[in-house]
Length: 348
Image (cartoon, rainbow, N blue to C red):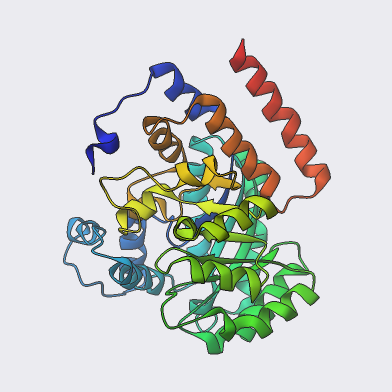
């Protein structure tokens, strides 16, 4: 990528700290967090034909030209997931990687609009319920899921909500999300389902301000009343929006490598998170679709360190993820004690 950070180094001590610090993650997609090799394995197992003759060729397709190309590959990957057992297989690999990066809590997006015709809902909810239990017992990770609606399939919105409500009863699903192409699919298409989701006691979040500019973020805030914004980095294009976000402290789920790979952030420029943090906007750091963007959560923090963020700033961004999560206050207090102990030890 750009010389803005590839030719910059950080100390070994800081790198070790960033690897070891207990982390929270609020914006990661299970399907997009499944690496190319696993997708290829699922395709072979389920006799799904991918437009590649080898794993290496399939991996090469992860060099995305733009958001639309990324979405094409993402949708191909979801087609390789044919059984509820596939998700159990994916979850274990996902959790092993999360544990490797000292991630203690994560809220994981599911591309529900693509699931509903492929799997019996009760079966797949049972897999996710077992996944939550497995995460805690094997990896000591707490995990919850936020199924989302694909913007370009707005007719699926109430089916997604019904699916979420079934999982909500079992403590598996905690909210409703909205992903996919912003262009041509404005928030007004989803105001009804968001209103019902809030009425049912669900948290609501939405991707916005990634491919489209600040108007998309305004829409997610005013029309959908989103509690957090996925990405939101193009808010910097509207000073009034930046001031509003700073005043309200509505969190942004920022995913730096994703923004560079999809050309949301110019390769020769520092990431927009610097301006947002300096303006007082509440930001968290996340990996989005890590193997698709050749990243992981630790690498996101290392990238920001290379762009001049101090240890204390990086720690605050990490702490922001805990505070912006949908954990109960009692659960947050437990993690605060653990994280404070780590921070005090590192300051010695």
